[in-house]
Image 1 (cartoon, each protein chain N blue to C red):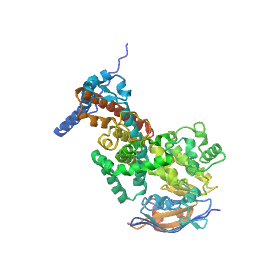
Image 2 (image 1 turned 120 degrees about the horizontal axis):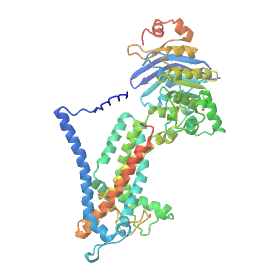
Image 3 (image 1 turned 90 degrees about the vertical axis):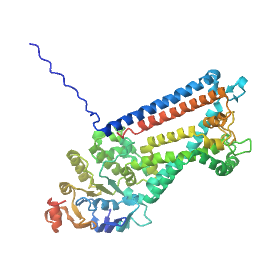
Image 4 (image 1 turned 90 degrees about the horizontal axis):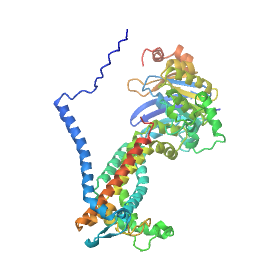
Length: 255
Length: 323
């Protein structure tokens, strides 16, 4: 049972307050979509869930992220342990360019200096879960960059899955892909949610409706920090939004 | 009826000639500068070959491999073996010392320092690169040598049983070890600024991906950052090596030039350097001996050219994924 929740999350970059009082609960084995116009703080928020802001010296955080009841920002918590449980797929496909397809799948093990009893089996399972095994099984030694953009993105998903995370964060995983690749990744998401909790940032309203069971609408108005305007079941947010701004956004009136 | 051939399509140039006065002047000066650099290098090489030919002719292969230099005009013997090997030895020590320092420095500036401190450190490193080598030589002689001699003595006492750290004279000054340190100080900024440039162009997403997979800073550095930027760093190292091979004055201040090959006893107070030797002997050389020194210049020129060629080859080959 994995519980992930965000409590009163605030984020600052330098003096700029970019995210205010975000409270979200991510139920186990469900897909939560984060939607909203560009610059509303969705990506900033999703990166707080596995401590990815560590590379930005000026970033500051308020509030808590609870993973199974433990605040992942407690000084006693090793961020490496958090990231092993909370995997991430990025907006642009970013396989490691110097590694082969196979080595990319196993890169997490190598990077975290872990051993696996059956690495070849792990490669196959992970690539199957990312539904790309049949496409690449005969050329596992090829450079990762020989794959198409959509395949590269699925390779990145397989790379995360190899570490067997409890939560998978996806930051606009399809924004750089063609419709066919997008559809295949959506199918993968629907299969994966049987096993893990998924949080996905997306600009695509249809995508949010196809894959998610609950949706949070983020908005940053007139230079104010981003906030969650509405949070509820995907069906409710899209079909019976309570807030007028949500209604305008999901019906394409702005953003 | 014979079919008529379609008329061939006229192939037109896509380049416009320069129309404005400014364009014409600019094109002319760019062309002139490019050509003159080629002509200049060729002329220098021809001049060196012409002036040094008598030395190559009279000394033969031994010029490179022999170990004697006797400037008795009756029986002039000129052989630069120990100097050539010395240049290679000192440069190698310099590179071995400089590479870890330079890479750590670049990593710190790009990935650890905040903006302001990073900028200050960058300027400082570039200033170090701009120090005239005679200044570094004086620093090496007056301030650094006594300190480094102390380190050398410590190394000898602890590890003297290993042949490369042996010392028979008891004098720890003016050794290849110290010259290598001085050279390292000169080339750290070169390697560091190339490496810094490469690190800063690295796709930050790759580093994020690595961290997101549960990697620590060290394993991200070793398994993602280094392999991805390796070729560029090698290029920077070879650039530094080229500088080290040609270094003259600074080494002259801190190294005993001895015409007897010191293969690897880096703490011994004897070593060699082609460029420093030319400097040391030029003032008192007769005409025939000058030819011998010119020949040393040719050898140095060829070695440096070779290193630079390898450098550009490696840099070009190293990153096939960057189109």
